[in-house]
Amino acid sequence: MLNCAWVCDDAFITFRSIDNFLGGFGLRWNVAERVQTFTHPLWLLLLVPVVLVFGDPYFAVLVQSITISAAAAWFSMRFFSADWQQAVVIAILLCVSKAFVDFSTSGLENPLIHALFACFIYGYMLCHGRNRTAYLCWIAGLSALTRLDSLVLLSPALLVTLIQEGRRSSVRKVLIGFVPLITWIVFSTLYYGFPLPNTYYAKITTGVSFGTRYDLALDYFTHSGTIDPITLLTICVGVLVSLSKPDVRPFGIGILLHVVYLLWAGGDFMSGRLLTGSYFASVILIVARVGSRRRLLAGVATAAIVLAVLTPRSPVWARWDETYELGEPSGVVDERAYYFNETGLIKTLIDPGVRERLKSEGLRLREKQPVVAARYAIGRVGYYAGPDVHIIDRNALADPLLARMPTSSGVILRPGHYTRSMPGGYVETIWKDQNRLRSESISGYYEVIRRLTRGDLTDGGRLADIILFNLGLSDLSIPSGVRVESYPVDEAIAALGPIPEEGFSGDTTGTGKLALLAESFLDRQQPGYAAAAWGTAQHLGAQSAAFWRLGGRL
Image (cartoon, rainbow, N blue to C red; front, side):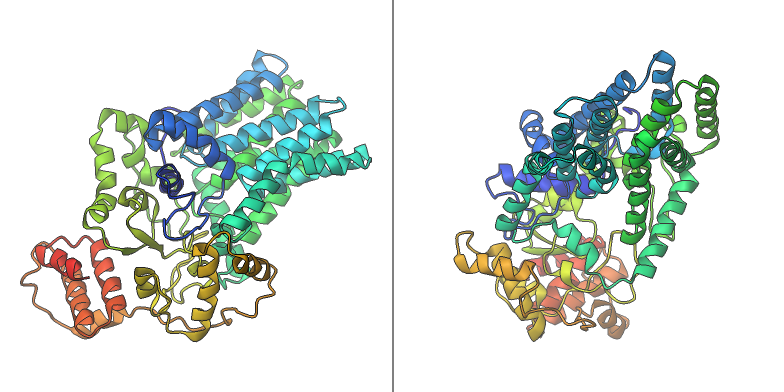
C-alpha cells in the first residue's frame, strides 16, 4: 500500500473546500457561492481535524487513508477468518487487486467505505443480540453519509434484517440509525439549497441517453477487466458464493444491484474506483463461507497470485517510479498511473520538487489573480489558486448552473465527466456578480440558483425557493434542446488567419492567436469573450510579457 500510495486530482477538490472552511469562508468551493462539490461528507468531516494536525492536506489524507485501510484489512482478517491460513488468503486477495490497492489511498472515500462494509457484514453475520438491527441501521447510515450509492449494496441485507425483526420498533431504529444522514441532508438543503451534492445534478441532467451511458459503463467494465482482471473475477466468484449460501444471499443480490446501478449511471472515468466496495465484500464472503474447504481456498489464492504475476499493471509489479503511456479512447483511465509521477508518496518524499511542479498552474493564477478562470481538471489548480480565484468548472461538478445545462454537442464523452458550454454572458455574470446572461430563459433560471447559492441564509423567500425548486414546482426551467451560446474561441481563431507572432515570444502560434483574439474582443467591448480567450491561452501555457499585460487589462 505504501509503495502505491498517491493522491488523485479529485481529492484536491475536497482539500479546497476544507481550506476555505478553515479559512472562515464556510464549507464551499468557490467562496462566492455555496456549492457542495464533494460526495463524501463523513470522509471530509473526519479529514478536517487531521488537516488541522498535519497542516498539509496531502499528507493528512494519506495518513487517514492508510490508517483506515490498515484497520479495515486487520478487522477482516481478525473476524472473518477461522485461522491464520484464512487470514493469509484475505491478505493475498487484498494485495493483488489493483483497484483495491490503488484506492486504498488516492485521497477519496474508499478506505472508509471498506471499513464500514466490514463492520456491516460483521454485524449481519456474527451479531445476534437485541441491538443488531440498530447497529446495522447505524452503520448503513454512516456508509450512506460517506457515499450515498453504497446503500445500493447494503440495502438488501438491511431490508432482510428489518423484515425478520418485524416490529414497529424497526422503524424507530431506522430513523435513529439514519440520524447523521438525515441531519446532513437537512443542513445541505438549507445551506447549499439542494439536498444532494452538485456532482449528482451534474451527472443526471446531461441529456445523455441511457444507451450512451450503458455503452460508457461497458467501456468502464472492459477497461477494468483488461488491466485488473482479478478484481472483476473475484467479484463474480463472490456473487456466486453468496447466492449459493442463503444466509449471505442478500449481499450477492446487493453486489448485482450495484453493477446494475453502474450500468445505469455510466460507470466512471477512474478505472476500478467504484468496484472496490464490491471487491472487499466479495473477499470477506468468499473466505467466510468457503474457508473450511482448504483445497478450494488454496486454489483461489494460488490462482490470484498467478494471475497477478501475469498481469502487467498488477500491484505485484508496482514501482514507486513507474509511468505508463496513456490515451485510452474510451475516456476510462488508470488514474493512479496518470498522477502517480506527481503525487506518489514515496516519490514526493524522495524528490520534494515533484510537488512544487504540480502547484505551478494554481500558483500562477494566485499570483496574477484573475477573477475568473475556466478549467476542466479543477482539483489541484483550484486548491493552489486559493480563495481569490473563481474557477468555472467546464465539467460542471463545481458549478450550480452548468450542472443543470445539457452536455456540449460534439464533445467526446467520458464516464462521469460531461463537458458543458458556457452560456453567453456567463463569464461576465460571474466576474461582476450580476446576472448578464443573454438567454432570457437561462437568465431567469440562473436567478433562482443565484438566490439559493448566494442569497442570505435567513431570507424567508430563499426558503420558499428551496422548497419549490427541489420539489419541481417552480415554473422556471431550461428548455430541453436549448442551444447554448458558447464563446466562439475556436471559430474566431480560424477566422483570424495568419497572424505575426511579434511581441508574443515564448507563446505557441495557438496561444498567440488567442491573446490577440482576447485583445480584439476587449476593443469591441466584449469582456466575456475576451476573458474566455485569455483564460484558454493561459491554460495552454502562454507566458509572454505581452500576454500578462493583456491580463492586466482584463
